[in-house]
Image (cartoon, rainbow, N blue to C red; front, side, top):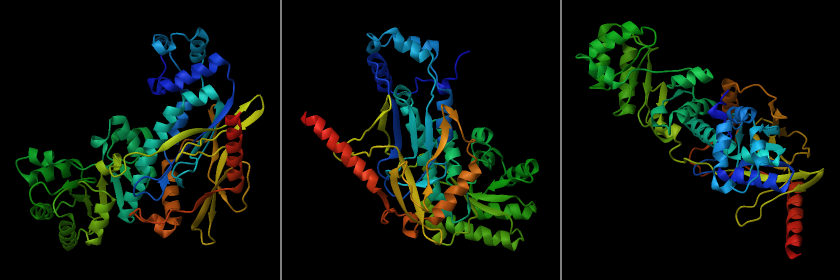
Length: 454
């Protein structure tokens, strides 16, 4: 049976495979630990929201190389001098490692491991690229969604961005991540089917324009969808359209504003609907919205019940990339454990298997985090990394997106108020390394300096 291309081992960078071949050719047999984290917070982000773990674990459980893929690798010039053992290894390749991770929806900060992998070094190396891509993208979108939903102040936000996503799969996964970040649902039907996300939709301007008469367009839609019709009222004239709907005596589920002066139009529409006794008809807005525009609209007194947010959300347009990295922190060769660190300028990484310890004030607000060694203990601290895979098999249920969303919203509310600021100008949330971890870093530095002198 042909393996699912979704889990192809070729979804990696070439240098992961050349290193894998190098380890096997030289007999370098180590059990290695790598940690995945964000080096620094991007522009206007005081915190991030972990997402993408389910897809990472799916890949680890299923990754393999097909015969055709191995034949392709054999033809690559870089492997011209590599023996058959490497390709035989790939034919039998399965991930057998252990993984610890933050649950999806967890609020975290730069330098904190989101995910920790311990596995034979070849396995841990080959899966690096996929893990980085899976965690980077969805974490970026979930973090943007957390900002947008915060700006909405409890009003519903629907993810509307698939048509502006960087490909359909990105659109589907962006919808998933957006829900983790607090969105109520998506316009993407595939995401709804695949992940059980509520789907929402109205109609496009083309529906209105395709009919000779706007009132007829409204009537036809209400006839077909009497309980779900949200009518688009800005194709020609917002006030005239609303008057037509009221005159028809056909109460819709809601009306949508997609252009124009959203603040002023929403106030007028709300007042007019209320006058008609239609207080439960929602006013929904869309059209190039983001957290800044939503904040501005509400500050102007807009009477909007829900927002559709597209391009800005699925592309995280103000900060479209995260500095997610995956670094070796420890090797174990025949029981001899060696901690690993990087000391290049501005890119120092800390050695050893780590845990993130979170402390809270008596009232429940988050106080500070400590990044420490995994074996350390801090009374009263919450441990953010939990085991999610043992011996290559998932050890936790699939992510409940509602629970992940609730986790995000609850943890966001427990952040210090300045850290929740959407401006990005707040003093950073307090995160420090433990004394033992700092000591291990110094120890590794001295060991490397001594080896260099020899």
